[in-house]
Length: 109
View 1 (cartoon, rainbow, N blue to C red):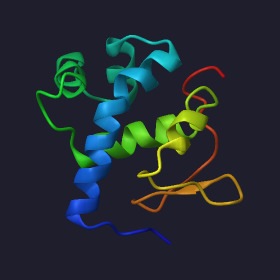
View 2 (view 1 turned 60 degrees about the vertical axis):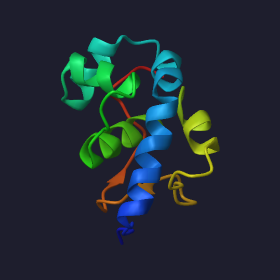
View 3 (view 1 turned 30 degrees about the vertical axis):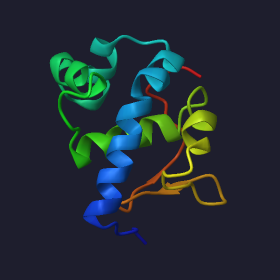
């Protein structure tokens, strides 16, 4: 079952991820261009989000969260942030949109 978050919760999650986005992206070892292509936004938009010049959309937050939660390089860091939704105990995640996901294969471990 999907969790439903208030607009205030969503804003808190988006801001927290934006604050930590450069660190998480660096941990993946990929460029802004590569990350932008993975999640379907422009490199310019990602630059604005990382520079805190634009707020990321909820859809962008979800895409980034799914990537970071299920990648072996970023999962421990992402899950250590106390203000993000946590994976279920069986290792899958049922995020705000109600999708069960296995570990990401978009990037090598």
